[in-house]
Length: 437
Image (tube, rainbow, N blue to C red; front, side, top):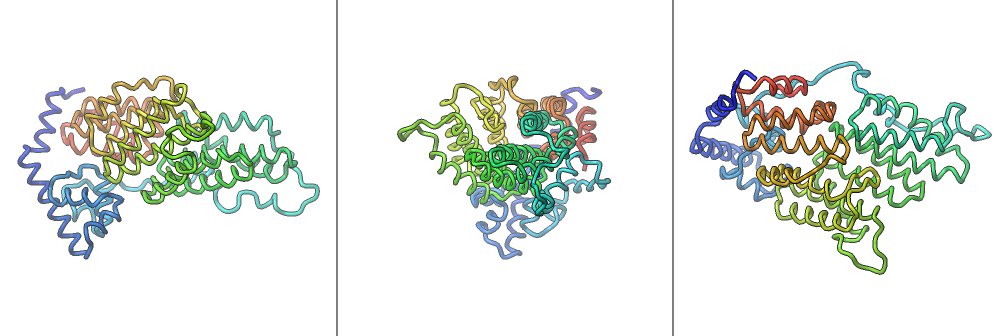
């Protein structure tokens, strides 16, 4: 790199100014938020509810105590106030221009089309005898195809995933409706898990609407299969789609209902100990709740749910991958890093992340850890360390970094902080991720 670490630090200090200047900027910004809120006739409680945040958080923003450094939070605040980002913060960068392109540019666009309308209208028409299409594979072979779909989703290989789903989904939808009675439940079970994979892929790409539909399809198919725990697995995907929509109340409702049904906070009780698969689901829903509370700025509740997930993980014999959740002690700590970053506790996030060995988990999970550590370093203005983490995440899961709004927002924030002193590696990464605007 042409700039030294010292040069980068000087650039950041020049960009941010001294402590007194930053305090004054926060107070000015907070006063502007309060004035705009009053102009809209909103109470702090009403605006906080619109943002999915606590009243305490908004009060601290208006008093100049709580900074608003993240662009996604700034955009959300502007939307809640009914003003442009430029009116709320004149020095904010303009929004990135949407990228237009033909349908074929996105490897999952065909899968999105498959979610449109009824999935198998032709199979409903009375055509005796009802039988699978000659081109449909036998169910024994389909199970391997479904496992491969999940492998592609975990590996961030969306082009291959889209191609695989184009033939697998229609075949499974027909098989579920035309197979004999004994095979029908198996077909619906495989269909449920395929839709779960599709929902997970759309969630990671920040396409919440498609993720929501796929999750709902997975729940319906799981009920038809008679596999009760697959219903919960689909519900978990639905909760994450709610999170992507920033429907925090709905995400909390979905996750809380699942926790209550699965056994409360994870403490042992009752006559029969829960199966490991149930514990994987229970712990995963606690992690959803931790993230919901972190996004709302509710630190005590977020920490409480993280500890509950840790408690559940301790009851398992190491890391597992039930329902492709990758739940276990390692993933809990990865999520603890993410929760700390959401709360702005960057030092805690880095301390926790330093103790995590995610080498046995999927590329997606390892990339997520690197990405969250990059966000933590960015919060502390550690430009060089943040860039290294972002590049590591990109190496593991390039499509996730380039297609996920959280990743782009973090990279965009870092380039804003670094200003003219941004190292070439950061500028090039921002170009690749479409995070220059």
